[in-house]
Length: 109
Image (cartoon, helix red, strand yellow):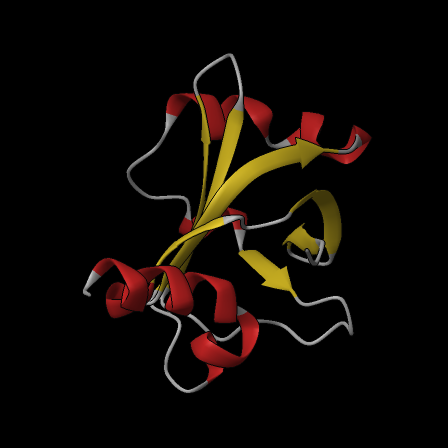
């Protein structure tokens, strides 16, 4: 499984395997593993789950390319932290997350 890097602006704030997904919606999400720099945005991620655009969040694939998407959000509720990547277009979604697409297709059979 790939490790994706999560940024706030140009600052690396954590990683995720984006182990879950909803292919028809173009959504990938998973457990977020913060690094020390996450402390600078943690309060905002814990108190504001509605609009985090001011944090300039993005997610990069292992090669460094930023995933083009509608939005990225970090849900910090005090326990496990989750990152969501919303609105990833096809065919890029299928290239990044073939396992999510395969699971979805299998569920339709």
